[in-house]
Length: 195
Image 1 (cartoon, rainbow, N blue to C red):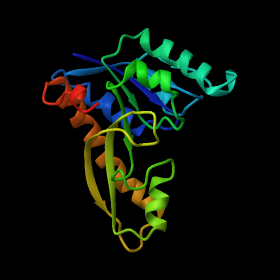
Image 2 (image 1 turned 60 degrees about the horizontal axis):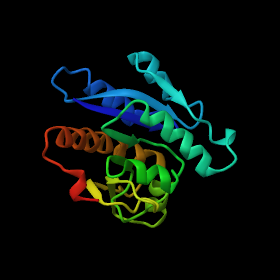
Image 3 (image 1 turned 60 degrees about the vertical axis):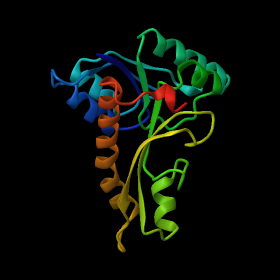
């Protein structure tokens, strides 16, 4: 049984999908803790599913490294097999990455390496692209530049707004994340081979 720690900044829709999947006794992973860098809306999922949660507010620390060290300490006390950045809208520092990679995954609403960064959906719409996608990657020290674990294309419709497109990407992102966790747990995917 894989032990997962999920880190969020917002509503936690990917987190909720993982929590729902893990309600199935056959699902080979369990979320053991949920962390956030702020008072995130998605922490309500922790309460709803009876999962311990913690918050490490970025503004409470003198710099990113100090914040990252405390975040790492909070994560490691749960002894996770896999840490998932699921909408954590803050770059984690190199020490955090080195301590956890390759068992550190991120979801991204684009077909990487296309449209990295925090405004991927907006960037795809503004670029007039005909398609974008969703990706799951191993986190490295760059911005959405780590090894790609899974990805899938999503068409951009002529009248798509950023919000409408993002709503169509989210279910694909969730499905890819759940399949990735399954593949790791079942031994079909070895993250060490990607790092």
